[in-house]
Image (cartoon, rainbow, N blue to C red):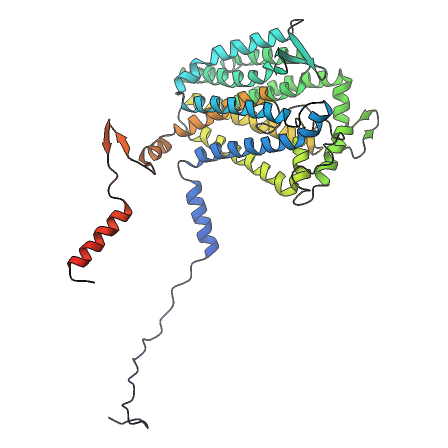
Amino acid sequence: MPSSRTGRPPVQRAVGRPAGPRPPRENPVLRAYLNAKHAWDRPLTAYYLIAGGSLLITVLGLVMVYSASQITALQMSLPGSYFFRKQLLAAVIGGVLLLIASRMPVKLHRALAYPILAGAVFLMVLVQVPGIGMSVNGNQNWISLGGSFQIQPSEFGKLALVLWSADLLARKQDKHLLNQWKHMLVPLVPVAFLLLGLIMLGGDMGTAIILTAILFGLLWLAGAPTRLFVGVLSIAATLGVILIKTSPNRMARLACIGATEPKSGVADCWQAVHGIYALASGGIFGSGLGASVEKWGQLPEAHTDFIFAVTGEELGLAGTLSVLALFAALGYAGIRVAGRTEDPFVRYAAGGVTTWITAQAVINIGAVLGLLPIAGVPLPLFSYGGSALLPTMFAIGLLIAFARDEPAARAALSMRQPRFGRKRAGGAVRDRGPRRWNTMRRRASAARSSGER
């Protein structure tokens, strides 16, 4: 063997393998998309979206109510946290209602449909009784509960219409009666018009629009033919035009769409224009929480109907887009629950609740953006107002119960193991097995016994 210059034998190099074609690299964007799609299609996605989205909207709403209502409270010689404390109390009560509704079986929800409808109609009739009903901002839609607490029965009318209509349509579908137009319309449309009439007696056009949207959403889910759908829509549109034409206040609100000056013609568009000013001054990330300028007396109803404008001013475009994304996720989850169920009641109820929350959010945000007339409806789960928050949170509990009741979701929940402690199965304690640290200790002991040190 020839030696090297140093006298050492030369190093033998390993013969290299012939270069072959390398496996193609996986696209990270495609992989991320597939992982996201897989996570999106999981059985519990709708459940987590509804529970998490509604919780985030409510918590962020509490923060913004505290920020937007401080100046108004101080101007009324009240503590700065006055409206926040009332909203927090309503949120706690609403949270209890949400938990109750999310644990109630579907049969109990159907059994409550008629009592809730009867109670809502009774309260809306009481609103028109002199000495009982109260007028707020020109609308006779309130009942005083003593002190500073009031209730708006028309807000509970939304929940009553959803539950009662879902039970009615489900029973008619089970009897194969929905293919006849008279069974589809009667008594659904007359009862809806009864609720609309009681609301319009108080002058609350905004809530009437929400109830009309719920009615059309239920008819669409029930498979109403096009000519029937167009007929009911024409009647509702005609009545709406008459009500708007006969009210100077509603005509003034309609004239403020797209206004850029506080006064546009005969209409005083102060609120609409200052809502645009608040959004425009927020920029990308806002002026900072609590640093709004418009809430210092320039923007009326800063903590109720126009809280989205204060959010845009203090949290900027990032904050408003986050709120929109949360409502979009909530709407998608509701549609998913309604589309995947086999129970007709669940389909109609979930579709009605989703239509209610989505339509109300679109009308409120559209009015703040100057794209729709100011209807005087709050942003669901976000604006100040216990009368609006309580039935909305109960409706969210309905969606959570329906999402949990899906067969795939129910199977996924039953397979989940508790993170801590032991799980009881059939009354007996079932051990989950040895802890991880105990398993590692046993492996170490076995290694030492085999001669390793």
